[in-house]
Every structure is written in structure tokens, then in C-alpha cells.
Length: 414
Ligand code: HEM
Ligand SMILES: *[C@@H]1O[C@H](CO)[C@@H](O)[C@H](O)[C@H]1NC(C)=O
Ligand SMILES: *[C@@H]1O[C@H](CO)[C@@H](O)[C@H](O)[C@H]1NC(C)=O
Image (tube, rainbow, N blue to C red; front, side):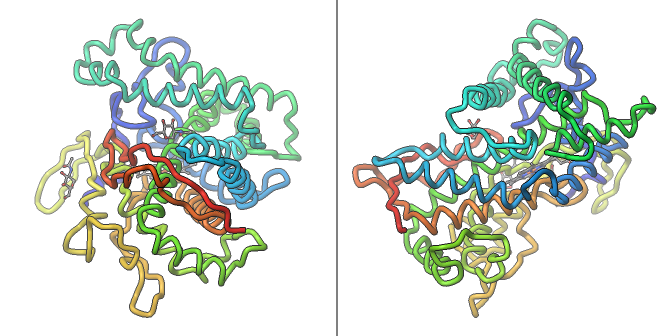
């Protein structure tokens, strides 16, 4: 797979994926749009924003709770929600809430109750932004670049995103009112510290526009991906009950039913770890990653790739490589186990992509997948409802690969 140089993100047009934005937006937002991390061009601003986000997530000593505690807390709430469903149900709505709430907890300092009006407004805006950007209008504009110059048309596509940015702006001003540099509650507070440090330096990338875009990027890049992977995980569990019971056996042995799972348990749980890896390999949720652009002329295997070329990497071609994987197109956790049942890392496991532009949230994502998944299976068994057909494993492809809608039934274990 060719990473196209050091990985400048193309000034790509809309409609290519979840967090795609127009390279230059109309009106007062034009500074903000195209900033942040996900769509930023390779350069100083991207570097500063990425480094800040990475260290802030890593040293999440903010406020009273660690990142792990926040994820664990949310996993418990989600499980209670599942348990309270007496009948069969589609898990998507609940998973959405929980995964978005983890980002809320990081960005805003606290989780929301699932029925909180503000929270539900945020989710609605987010969903509308996702749909508008990958919707038909966006795709037409993408095909016919001339249309991207018509302001009212762009406004129409971008409306949900503007509203989302306005929402984040409200949150930021609330933070500013109560901000105390000696007591950092969350990501926004930490960002305000950076802004304070460079307030005499107009060339710094730490400004309010970038604060909004970087926070937006955490939601954009961090919630749909995790939410889709968890839906694949539950789907595979109801389709492969023997795998599910083996995971449960391991949980019972290593964690038991009393205490909550922690990240420290991963090393003792090779089978569960292998299953989660296989969910990600098989689910293959972002087959073409995000578009990149070469920032200088490159030569790769004798081919010249001029500066400014858009390079698309095909992650599927690695995740499903027939020469590497024993059963590339099947859900087969043994891909990640040796003959003694030990976990094995595989070089071709690249759902987070590779190189300098690889996923910034990998650590958080792994934490969410492990803690959510083990909490689910510690407390519940998942089944296909008896009046439902066996759901299909074939993905729906719209830049991300998602499972089709399916219902589940849960049975409490403890
Ligand atoms: C299962 C969950 C996830 C998967 C499979 C995933 C996968 C990816 C992939 C494939 C890319 C593109 C890399 C490239 O173009 O080469 C990416 C980029 C990114 N991801 Fe994730 N991601 C996940 C979760 C998260 C989370 C939880 C966050 C943060 C809260 C996050 C933040 C980002 C950011 C900021 C980028 C852009 C990095 C840059 O351009 O420098 N992701 N992710
Ligand atoms: C979760 O995924 C679904 C389907 O892809 C999407 O409609 C929804 O907006 C996502 N929710 C969040 C919070 O990312
Ligand atoms: C990516 O690779 C897979 C497997 O090699 C192939 O089937 C698929 O068509 C490729 N996708 C694109 C867009 O070329």
C-alpha cells in the first residue's frame, strides 16, 4: 500500500466521507472550515493541532476522571439501557448515544443523560451533517465543481454543519465563563490554555476557529467509526454464538462477574482481544481511508507521482489480502491466535491506516471497543430474536461499510 508521501490531506471536495468539508466555506466560517485536523493540509497548523489532541487525550488527567473511567462509566450506562429493553430492539440508537457521549465527556467535561434535550439536539445535528455531506446534493456539487461557487447552494449543503459549529461555539463560551487554568476540566479547557499562551502571537494555529474545528473533528472522526464497529461486533456475536460463549468464558475466568473490566485485563484475554481485532478486520469500516495528497514529487516502484496528486489507499486490499489471511472473507478470530491460543499481532491489521496521518484516536478507540465489548458480554448474552431471519453479513457501502439494520434480544447473565 502506498501512503503517497508524508500524507498531506488533499483539499478534497465534499461528499467523500464522514467528516468531509468544503475546502473553503462561505461567510465568517471560511477560516474555520478546512482547519482542524482531519481535513487540514500537511503543515504547521495540522502538526500543532494533531500533537495537541494526541497529548491531551494521552495525559487525560483532566478533572476528576481518567479517560478509562469515563469510558467504563458510559459502558455501564449503555448496558443498563440494553437490560431495560424487555423485547427485541435495534441497538443502533443506544450505541450512538453512548459513543457520542464518550466524546462529550472528553470535550465538554461530562456525559449527558440519554434523554437530555441538548444532547439529543447535538445528535440530530450531527446526523444531519453526516447525511448532508454524503448526500446526493453534495455528490452532484462534487462532480460539477462549478456549482461549488454558488453560495446559496453551498449554504444549503453546509447548513447542518454551521448549526453544529454554532452549538460548539455555545459550549466554548460557557467554558470561557467558568474557565480556571488551575483546574482543567476537559479538552476545551485545555485548548483555552494553549490559546492563552499564544495570545500575543497572531500566527499561532491555536485560535477559536481551530478550537471549533478540532473539537468537531473529535466528533466527526471518533463517533461514527466506533459506533459502526460496535454494531459489527454485536452482529458477529449473534451470528456466531459459539464465539460469543468463548468470550464469555474468558471474561468469567479473568474478570468474573463482580468487578468492572479494565484495560489491564487485555493481556490476560487473548481470545477476546483476537475477536475484537477480527471484528475490525472483517468489518473493514473505512475501506479507502481518507484521501491524501502528495506534498512533493515522489517515486514509488519506478512510477513518478507528481506533487499535488490525490492518493487513495485501499485498506481492504490489505485487511482482506488473500495471500496473508487464511480466510480473508470470513469472520475467523483464529487469524489473531497462535496454536497455543496466544494473541498474535499481524502486520496487515491496519483498520486505523498507517503513517503520519493514521488515526489519531486509535488508543481511545481500542479502549472503547474493549471496555464496551467486555462489559456487554460480562452482563448479557445477545441473540437473534426467534421471529427474525438471520441478519446478513454483507455490508452497506457508503464510504464507510456498515452492517444493515438488525434487531437483537438480550438475556441478562448476572
Ligand atoms: C474503531 C474506531 C476508529 C477507526 C477504525 C478509525 C480509523 C481511522 C482512519 C482509517 C483514518 C484515516 C487515516 C488515513 O487517512 O490514512 C482516521 C483518521 C482520524 N481519526 Fe480515527 N478511527 C477510529 C476512531 C477514532 C476516534 C475515537 C478518534 C478521536 C476521538 C479518531 C480521530 C481521528 C482523527 C482526528 C483522524 C485524522 C488524523 C489526521 O489527519 O492527522 N478516530 N481514523
Ligand atoms: C452512528 O452511525 C449511524 C449510521 O452510520 C449514523 O447515522 C449516526 O449519525 C452515527 N452516530 C454518531 C453519533 O456518530
Ligand atoms: C480495493 O481492493 C479490493 C481487494 O483487492 C478490491 O476488491 C476493490 O475493488 C478495491 N477498491 C477500489 C476502489 O479499487
